[in-house]
Image (cartoon, rainbow, N blue to C red; front, side, top):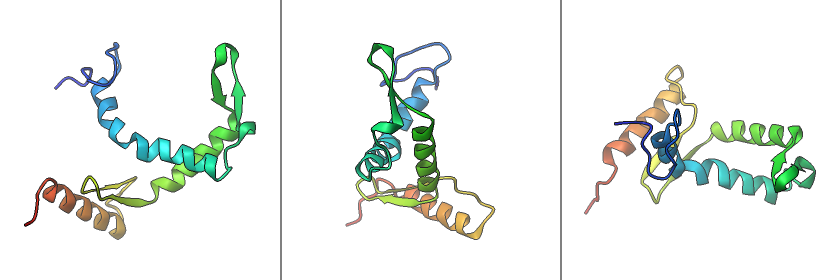
Length: 118
């Protein structure tokens, strides 16, 4: 399997399009939902953005820090995507009892993925 060959992302030299395609499924959970939450909670406001020439808008340093801190906090959480019947965990380590427990749950969910119980 060639990691450069994707379906959703354009082919460019050195770009892992297949990896980007696979990550796209989690983008709404990891990025879009977090961004909207930060805006709705007014943790990100107009003062966190700066307009660039050509119409682009970028996060300023304070805005980037807010996003990174929120992302780091979110990575500590575990969530269950019931629609997909799969458990996704962030930064799981086998060094701790809790990490091993989470990985066992992920393995069980993957083992049963796609199985329909009657």
